[in-house]
Image 1 (cartoon, one colour):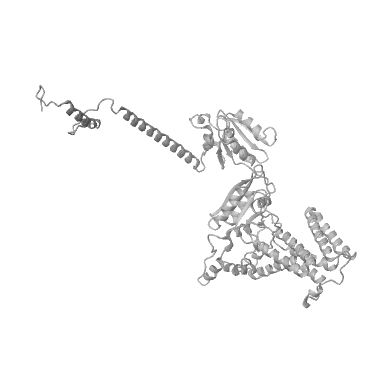
Image 2: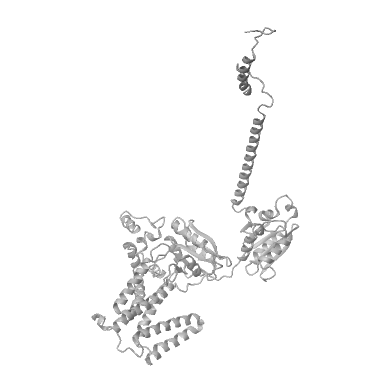
Length: 596
């Protein structure tokens, strides 16, 4: 190997090239083959450094945006979850046309277009200035509680203008310090503001703010609780439901002071905005039943239900042309509370003096509160008398007609049944005319003023009972058995069930007229099968007869003493089936009834 002029080894060109190629990758990594650090050539990795720097900046920017979104979402969540605080929804969630204008003149123009301001005399705005801030109180004069609003205005008149110059929202200052009202909420939706005013609340608006306060200072026209009309008792409470939802809720709460009692408020009708309260005991009621009922009510899409609970029933329960009631109506708070403790769900509709209880069965509809106001023996006797009256109202007329038309079918021990003479009209026509006559008298009694009801009843009794028989239009037996059937119908606790039983009686009568005994038996069988296939919110309508449950059927036939009534009806699928602690000797019987 040769040396150069300095005495160092001189490499040839061929030998130097591989060395340079070997050194290149090591220089790129900053070290030579001996591990010594060598400086990187300028511009070798500039593109890679710029790419890495841009990626780092992009990741940092994305992290900052994500943290900002999370903080904003956390702030909104904290504002919304603040109990009783100044909770305002995100304005971005609202449509531009639904936002409250920040200028009071624009706000008034919106009210003229959307709420009937200056077009309807009861829609009023009281404009005042508090703390150099123009404000407006929007309310309906027919629902406003003057004393409450006067107290609000009186308190605001002492407001110090300097307290509104602290840099915070003027409306929030009003809300936290100067508004002496118990129930106050915040909204930034114009539609929500108008809806709240239409149900009787008062909206408080401050110029320059895009939000408003909703003050609950309403007072509905109401009456004091009176004795129920259809569910009277000899002993017991005389207070019944009224047309005011809050009053009805209070009557139930007074009897059922359970902290697990829940009343969910819903609205039905795009125009009526009817309040509907769904009540249940949370640790007793079936969650599937509660969820199903809630979904059905929320799915209602209709302009309104001015006729209240009956229209709501038709929209939630598939009754179609079924004459039998699939829910129970009650005017008594104690009856509703008792059903809720058994796992039922109640539906209270504003403006209705009755409450819907569901699910229900045929045998629920034939029981009355009077039976539970007496001791077990007397209550059982009254229940049997009522059952006899209901059965008479259904089967007495068809059977008597069948025996009168076909004496050969009459048993010997029923020798007294039949008619000595049939009259000028056929018996079936006489029965149909009397049925229509009784309905006419019932309707006339409803529409006749109270002082004249007695006179109208006397006239009707004389015309139908005396003159019609003397003229030969009807025979005495027709009037007698029709009166017994009518008494049995009026003895039915459920008014709706009594009307349905009347339709069944007419069907059986026509079947006996057309096909004699086979027709009566076939019609009765078809009706029983039809009712056994009917369901009330997925509950068999003829339970506990079909499907058969011996223990529950015995509880229907006998009014058990309270200490013996330990288990809730299994048909309600309750979370807690036992109402009282079961004794060791009775636990097996209770389990068999509960799972029957």
